[in-house]
Length: 204
Image 1 (cartoon, rainbow, N blue to C red):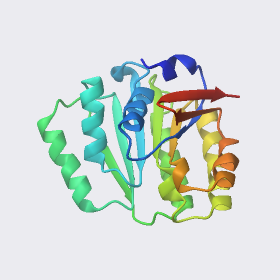
Image 2 (image 1 turned 135 degrees about the horizontal axis):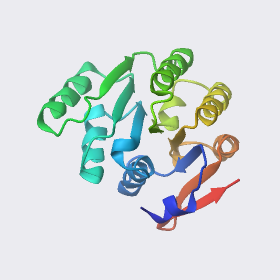
Image 3 (image 1 turned 60 degrees about the horizontal axis):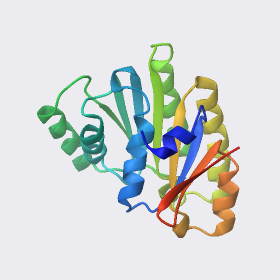
Image 4 (image 1 turned 90 degrees about the vertical axis):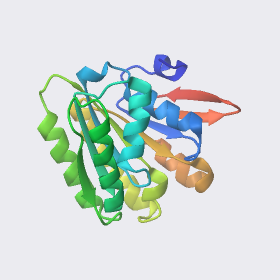
């Protein structure tokens, strides 16, 4: 468990501010997803820019085994990524084959919200802890304006809190103006920012 994990308690929504191309960011992502033993976790990966197979390989190299349930919501991804993920399934230990849903229109926030809610309903009451990675808000902001994204996140983070879900959201601060970053920060229970070689954790 990283220093970041020890500084977080029961925060439902965490904003991760770090470069999308950073190894440190990738490692923190997996760490935040594995704060409970895999067999007691439901993992939902909402990804705009990363392929499901890449996410799965990162998970397995860190955790060593599949979570109880693994679901990908691949937004705007190609079929090639889905095919690659299927190939990974065939060559790795199988606890439960990951389900890959696709949403072809990255700007369809209504559809994204509906699909996310469907997954939460399916997992509700199964006794496992549900964790979510949203990768990334930087990609989402390429397709929707900041005000629309803010409203969407306000609803989504509230839904996660109500359902007892722990979620973290990636944002590359260098890709946005300070006003956008500061406005989005207000939506989250905690903000984790990579600064001067280390992660700084700020909670409400």
